[in-house]
Length: 628
Image (cartoon, rainbow, N blue to C red; front, side, top):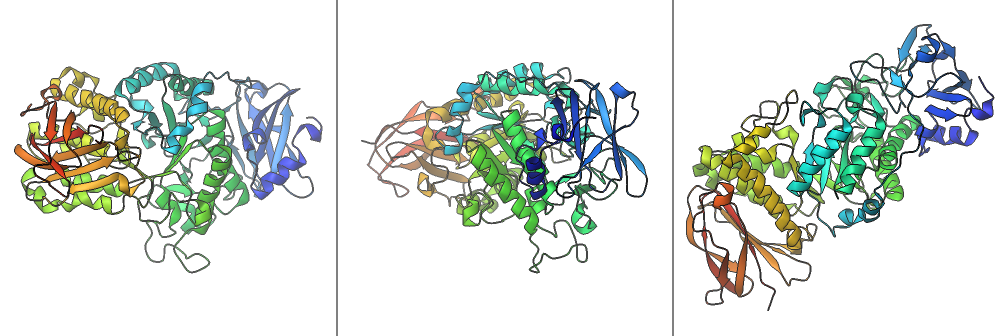
């Protein structure tokens, strides 16, 4: 033991009690001390707490309750024998006299699952080499550089690659070659069950030990930053698993979880739900968001399952939920937690992305908190995803009857700042791969997938693609096996991969495709009503209207020779992308490098027009000459 002033300070305790300690990881959990390692844990309802670990042969070493000017619920001790790499747990005696052993909620390192002890981390300062990236990354949230996201589950990238450094090399090289600006990692915070893909977190402050120690995770981020690639993490503040050694019933009572099962347990996932209204729990979550941004230089958080947090009746029938204090279904404490998180992150890290996976029509998700919004920078447009994939699942002959499924999203495209996701959730659990979903024969499926990708990239909203989408696999994703890399040896699959490389390269060259994603004036329909031919055409405008990209899509297997498209001015319009080009394994139907627009026949509300031969199941991008 040591003196109280070497344990914790009064200001730290005060901030934690009111829920505003922004660097909670420097108060709780293991800390390097002059005479050893200080361990501190919040367990307000325990009658005693001890630390057990490798250095004391797992024999209890008592912690002292730190009560300064009132109860805090924090217990602390300095152990002069503990050191980096030692495994440990807290042994808690409940108010009923039971003894339970728990992993540290604030552990910054863990054993590799299925082992579940906490591990004393190294206390050395990591040396970053990403100053240039960090100085410039704010251009993404400002919209002056594009956002294109490649979603990754590290555990099924390659089964033979299971360490951070090899993953950094392989993932970084692949993503750089494809041309995405960011990777989004399915949760890498420690989780006991790999089949949860990380969405049932047990160690909120510890990168998973499946790939090595925490500095390996830092090296992964540092390496990707060196390639000019940002790193977004999936973050799960909605719920946590019930493992008896983890957060649940931590001191023998509901502590991190809400005590009322109607608010504290999730019926779909068999998990506990955080008590969002409790100061210390709110502090645990807000500080956790800051921890990843600060300690690991993460460039954004994608917040999982936001809808499940917003509604008290989410997945609950009559009699299974209680109203809020105003008689409504809104979860007021969860709303305040999200708003506080986004506010605090915005204050400390104004250059990072905060992305909501929110599946309902909740208003103002990406509006500032000061305007009554939730304060996110972006929201996944799940409605667009379901409508688009639903349209393409129809046999081409029937798509004329579902034309509005592709146009509907433009009605609300500017209500929020959207990401357009083709995510992992849509290629698993019997839903089939993207390729398998698309209606028609095999050739039509490949052609439809290529057209879908060009369609996704051409619309307002940042594109997101789950890993492996560039391989066009026939089978849906399986987290127990690696991606089918061998498919790149086949021209049909390689064509999809190479097309993505090209549309990313072209997107860099034509800011009209992304610079005005939040401005309705940046998008203009040419023809949204040609349901008979399943044809769509529109313009994307650059900042000053001096350049444009005309986008024309044909979602039938019938070529359209002589299709007239309206254009805003005369001159040679370059074919920037033609998804039917033979180089992508398309039919190569009358492929041209450019077309010439004249004012001989105004069309589709435009003063000029040109004739375009558009191939079957394809999309064409036409890049304008500068406005005369």
